[in-house]
Amino acid sequence: MSSSYDIIKLNNAVFYAYHGAMSDEQNLGGKFEVDVELQCDLTEAKRSDDLSKTVNYEKVYALMKSIVTGKKYYLIEALAHAIGSGIIDGFPPVQRAVIRVRKPGAPVHGVVDTIEVQTTSER
Image 1: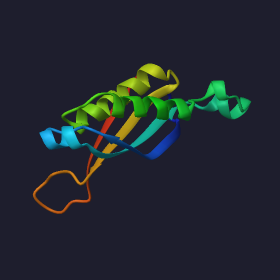
Image 2 (image 1 turned 120 degrees about the vertical axis):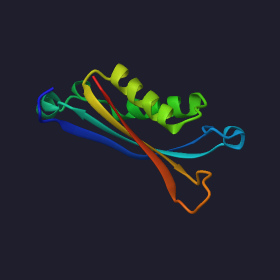
Image 3 (image 1 turned 90 degrees about the vertical axis):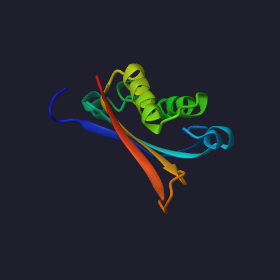
Image 4 (image 1 turned 60 degrees about the vertical axis):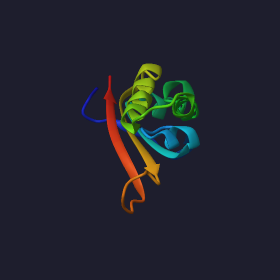
């Protein structure tokens, strides 16, 4: 990929799921927030105004939802990696995917709005 790229972002997709290292987290579940930043060359899409030449973000959202709600992960690091790998494998125009997963109300001994992990997957 050249040094210049275009970006498609899906911000703050919210899902209810059952991830965490503690049994309560895996049994009771909780809210998870996901951001994805897709870096790709959108030159053909911009020129043609053709959906088939870009990344269909509705399909990206569906993939995110299936990964977040389809399997329990102990770590949000593993969840973020699964989302990034799924996007790279399923959407050839995407050269790099930056994934942020937030866990509001994470069980820590203190006051924290969210815990967030950011990972990057590349082609």
